[in-house]
Length: 159
Image (cartoon, rainbow, N blue to C red; front, side, top):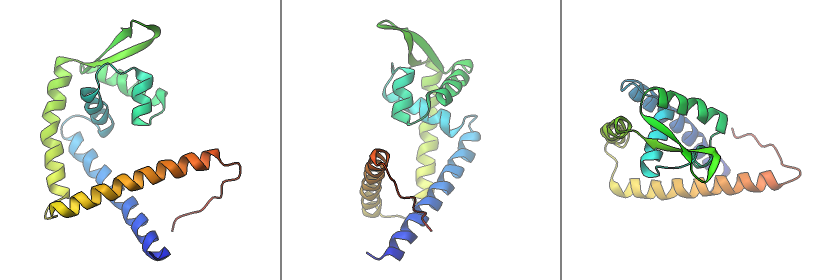
């Protein structure tokens, strides 16, 4: 594969990602939430009882950023913090009944967004693209870990 093709692909991926994030932000705002809150609520629906530290790690967020986000969700009555019985310093996170209903209602928005952005794409294309995105994510994580372990990383800009 040519270097130019790789550059074009990465540039298109970055631009598409930015556009998708902006589109999701607009749609989420229409439902009275943010993309970040939405992500937290979906993750907790899948894994209720996570600690704040574990949730930050899973979402790849800084713990201090997550705390402010969680505070807002608690204030909105969508989330509860319960003391961890094994660690007095930690809290476990649980959706409230209102939080469960809210995140369930957001499923229709997620379906609508997927329908909009994947309109007209054959299932085979979506499946192949999904496999490619999983591979790219794995490569990025590996490259990031290798770069962090390196004593003398090279700074290379993508153009």
